[in-house]
Image (cartoon, rainbow, N blue to C red):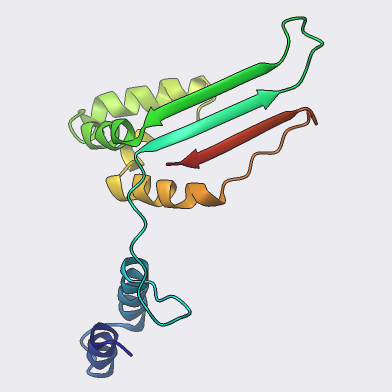
Length: 143
């Protein structure tokens, strides 16, 4: 057991933190320093820089041949956009939210926080896209 984990458990035993707080702290430690099966600590995964969406389709029925889409969006653009929402007055955000909902986009800009974007980016590795077209393939990932 490492020293930081021991300190968290000691604070829990002394009643300085709750069990939920201890669990969150231990989870944060594991994200920062995951132990590998060999007992050594691997190098942390580099922070992703781009969101990639790649689509290939073998559909020749359109007459134009196979289709290919390759989009690479800098994640820093997303991070900066989330930070900029804190500068927008609440009344303006409310009006934008109304227009987004009218357009069928169920996003509440008042709830966007930088930590939410980091969680989203972290979970993109688990993203799966299913298509009805057996001749098409879509990949969404961070690099």
